[in-house]
Image 1: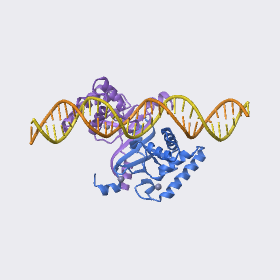
Image 2: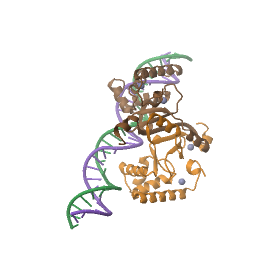
Image 3: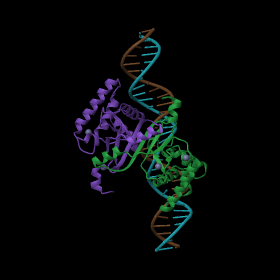
Image 4: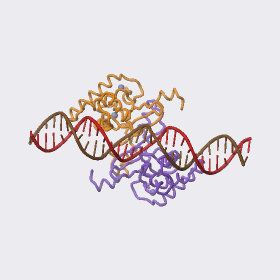
Length: 161
Length: 161
DNA sequence: TTGACCTTGTGATGTTATAACATACACAAT
DNA sequence: ATTGTGTATGTTATAACATCACAAGGTCAA
Ligand SMILES: [Zn+2]
Ligand SMILES: [Zn+2]
Ligand SMILES: [Zn+2]
Ligand SMILES: [Zn+2]
């Protein structure tokens, strides 16, 4: 069942959202972190579409719902969720996306479709990079791995574009 | 001689700058691209320190030298240099750095020291990611691979910090 | 009740990046 | 000489992304 790692295939989304929220709640309880209404709602918003959203897009949703209107509200909630590992930041897009492996060990990689904007999360530790780091004495703490290209759907519809 | 791939070791910098500029000039001549004064100077500025610089830092240097004062001047020159492969953009830092493998085939990875800001360029194609892309039918066009951590020097001086 | 700590509200500001339009120059065709 | 075309540059304005600084509330334990 590769859909939860590759993300370009359809899946049972409503159960996926519920499961992710439950996992977040459980993990917060365990680590005594507070999944407050704003934080929970931001996670929910990101889960609703699996798309990457900018902080200001999230903020607009919060504002419409009366949960906050100023940038720090969104950035704080997103920061919390990223710290907890429930959300990932996509550097290439200056955007955020809900994790699709809630609870799993994390060294995520992303495939970003430049045509439709779809982002798929994969597990793809970079062994060559780890080797290069070891060789040069670099202490590797975190890695950003983001690939840009065309998702299966956009390859067929749009030719090479 | 790993210093040109790993970047944490010292090297003959003045010759490295000269060589990079010569390579850029040669490649531009071959591809009929114009290495204009502003473009050449921006490349030089990035080569002077091997540090990653923000576009506005570069712009400040240009401004001081009377080569331009408005953001598009810097962004255009940087965009040109990135397109030509002489400069890489570091997504994690929203910054730019001169390529340390001028002319070589390019699938660069970077190691970024979170303490001193040093950035080293390495070659580290991600085989696992290529495999994942192939498996899911994703057409992989470009990859961003950036690692954050501590360089050798900062590990010894600052403990874990 | 007080203080420590965490979270939120809000105004102001800082930083990064591009859109849009005008100008200048080189070089070729008329 | 003039006009056209393409590339590069100059300039204004604004979009888009992110943080600072300070005030206010809530919880909980001393
Ligand atoms: Zn889903
Ligand atoms: Zn994840
Ligand atoms: Zn050098
Ligand atoms: Zn360092």
